[in-house]
Structure formats: C-alpha cells, structure tokens
Image 1: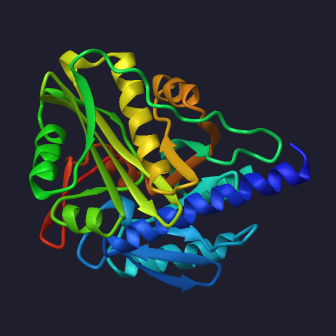
Image 2: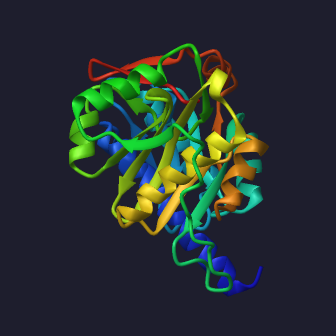
Length: 297
C-alpha cells in the first residue's frame, strides 16, 4: 500500500472511530483525556462496550506507561482493565505492548466499510435494492408501534442474530433517536409477517450497521442480502457517504462484499484475563439508566 492509500485508509478508519465514540456518548458514556489516551466509562453501567481505554485521536503510538495510567484511571471508577482500538491506525507492536502489560485479546471484530464515493484509486459499486421474492417487503419504522414490533422480532427466540457489532442496543430511546435522525430501524416482512430486522446508527454522514436478525425458518442467503442491501440503501438515501458494518463471519463478509463493502481492518479489544473470561460468559442483558441493553458481544 503506497503512502497516499495508507493515508486514505487511516482517514476512513478515524471516521469509524469517531462514529463509535459519538454513539457511546449518546448512550451516556463519558470520556476523559489521560495523557495520550481517552478513558471512556459509563457512570451507571459496567457494560464492556461502554468502559474502556483507547488511544487519543491522531496519536501514532502510546507508551505502555500511559496505557497503564489510563487503565488505572478506569479501575478507580470500578471498571475492569480494557483497551480498545482500531487495528490499522496503530502498528502491530501496539498489540504486543498490551500483551506485555498482561492483557489478552478479548475479541476482534473485522470491519467492513462502504464508501459512496469510493476510494481515490477505485470507485464503489452502487448499492441497489436486491430483488425480493413474491410477498416479501422491507419497511422503515417511523412510529412507536413499528419500533415495538422491531423489538418483538429482535428478542424472539425463533430469530437468529446474524450481524453483531460494537454498539449496544438500547431499549427506551428508540423513537427519540429515530426522530432525531440518529437511528434507522428496518423490518423485513414475508406475507405480512415480520421475519427480519436491521438497525443502523447515524452520526452526521456516517452510519453503522448495529445489528440484523432473521427468523430461523426464513434464513436464506438471498433474504439476508436483501435485508443488508435495504439497510445500506436506507443509509445512503439519508445522505450518508460512509457505512460501517461488522464482518463477524465469512458469510457476513461475503454478503457485504457483494454489496460493495471493503475490508478495513478490525476493532480489537484487549482486557485482563479475568475480565475477558467474564465477558465470554456475559448475559445478553445489561442495565443502563434503568433500561435494558442487549449485549452484542
């Protein structure tokens, strides 16, 4: 990768980083600068995705002692030792430095990005709505009743959560977020029955595919692609020129690549061995501001 391509890639990854920080702030997380790191923590929730240390923007390297200072600051607030960063913005040696501090990889989420204008060296294919089978339709939720139906699908045991992400899903502020243009919720129907949902968070001209789910009996590659395409198209129609999505599985990545998404590094999380073990067994529900949050990690 030449210097110009590397700069362009980092610029895009910084936009993804900024989007996630803004989304976590909307959920009530606070951010404090401690040397060359930011300490993100939530005053009433210990949920992993809202409590972590991350390198400050435009830092090329963070010395181990400054990472330790950030971790100590986080632990003083009763939170577990945890460091998150986007691989691609920092050299591989940064991960090695975190391991030397006794941290272990908690999870790594591949990032897929769609750019409306494409890269300087390569245009992006336009996202077109996939042909839908007879009786299948996709609608956007615009009122409380639609949002309640969205939640019915999301929490139903007969549905598989197919796409996970770096943002928790909050119950209770959905309609306000939709009205403010910070969220897009979609419902996939088959013969007037909801069989799938998708959610995007929106920050300015950027969007993140927070989650998708399909009914187990209706799960096909064509319906999954149709739902993903509808979600991406909705973000583009809203004026977004960058859409980020997690590529958790190879099937996810193949679906997104077919829509014009590109592989753009990973979101990496390191934590203490104890915290990583607890996170692996973490229940799907957390409590934040009196509202349940569905854990997507």
